[in-house]
Length: 348
Image 1 (cartoon, rainbow, N blue to C red):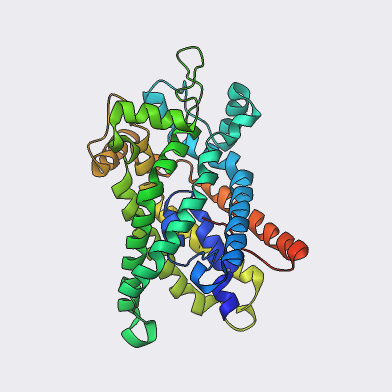
Image 2 (image 1 turned 90 degrees about the vertical axis):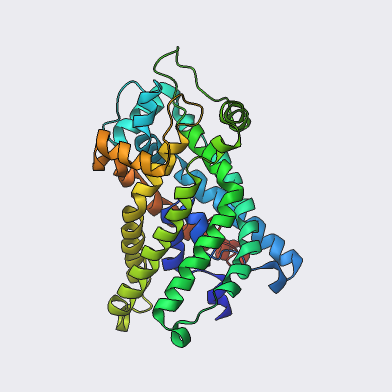
């Protein structure tokens, strides 16, 4: 049982990979969907440090491998804001077109633009998960068999939302910076100049134009997204697992992976419009015209662009999730081969 607590199943790991990219995944992982490193008080400082660093290496490997498709997802998702700002000449026709135009206009290496901020984000997120996880777990300590399903489910959402929002508060600006860098295509107007020179420049220019509020634009709807995604994930998981994973399929790797794919994609697609709204709000920092609120952003996007616009980039997001899960699975096997054990998965 201890090993199962320390090493997430394929189901849990895949669940943690779908978003997030988005910051929803940080919120989900803060509550044990992907508990990649045990708390330091339960193990020696040396072993904790090794697990923490190996988790960081794993995060860097998986994020870097999936960075190209992640950038394409963000470009497609936010292209309408880029067109408004004059930083994109025409809409992308699809994933292939976005890849081709980005490589042609900016070079192959540009597919990793914004990845550094995404990798850096792992370490404070993981440390904050340790800080908040046990506190909120004790506060909403309901047992499914003792208190009933709905009380347990509600407590799960409450603890997940509270811990996720707490962790997200500290790392949100990094997610904002990553989003702005990834969407910083060479301007269609102005001689192909970029808006930002790097991570520090994003902070400097945003603080100058919008203040602290500019770094946290879209934060409130992001917290809602954590709860929505978590509710959908656990609701689908508890409904489908007892029905589908029975008999010979109970411990079957491929059956677990397939169910993980189904649930994470279902929950991810259902909550994807929230991710679109929050990132579209991020893109308005430093611009003359901003949305008044997340509700205003949602209404304007629906009115002017249609519901389909809320799901732009969802196909690329599914590919990113599969790539990330595959890389992590392979990395786990390499760790077992070379070290004789599996360290943290680094999914955050």
